[in-house]
Image (cartoon, rainbow, N blue to C red):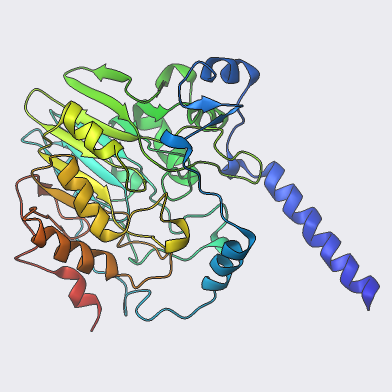
Length: 370
């Protein structure tokens, strides 16, 4: 019996090692030349990227046991009672759109932003499961996407905030890559894209506070308090960031993933006020409060950014933490009201203008709890 158990464990280890080393999902590795280049960054020490003030996501053994145990707990209302009903958007409508700035939310942190006749995808995780293999995660709350990748028109830019699976998705990138003109990423994330066959000339990597332009749109990489890594040995080998997207008419902020800290006020003081801010609100826990915000902090971040309107993101698509699926929106709505901070909460797939206020008119999440 012991021999049989030993053989089974050995086979599992071998399969796991082969998967880790052969699966393209895990992306590329940082070269020595890249390490030498990144060493010049203020955010890079001893071969890894760091947060402001040295904040880490390290957990004690006890906390790790709690976190693993939490994965097996039954959480009331952790997923919608039935698949979320989304709005579909027509491919012709998307391709021929050249009017004022609008966006389509795909759930979680994925967006199509149409601005100045440009098509911009933000963190396009458009697959069913945010994991290196479908068996390693839970499926999306909705049965379908607002528009399938194959029906999207040419994409002028894809913006990536960091390399975690719920933001940088291999299958989505493979379907998108031939219709994208430029990829904009924080330092190091381009190594994954190159591993997946995207030419280096199509990738622009930025450090915090660096910026790039394409035509009449400016992109600025700004700080976030988070971490990175896709495997067991590449923790913090690539940078994470938030993004500012500017035109002559509008100033938009996208948080990526981040804990609540002073960088929001610094960004607001330097580049605010923002017409619209998409801010993380979901997948939080006391055990990792340094690198993910609670909903009340989402509203505080909006205030610090001097945002005229905020939209809570990083919720509504996947279960990645031990809270109900509506807890984020319910809590941030209450705190935003206390701060007199306008909140917009469009349905997934609804083509939305920045000036739209969907909260007072349609609390759509309530329809999926009946």
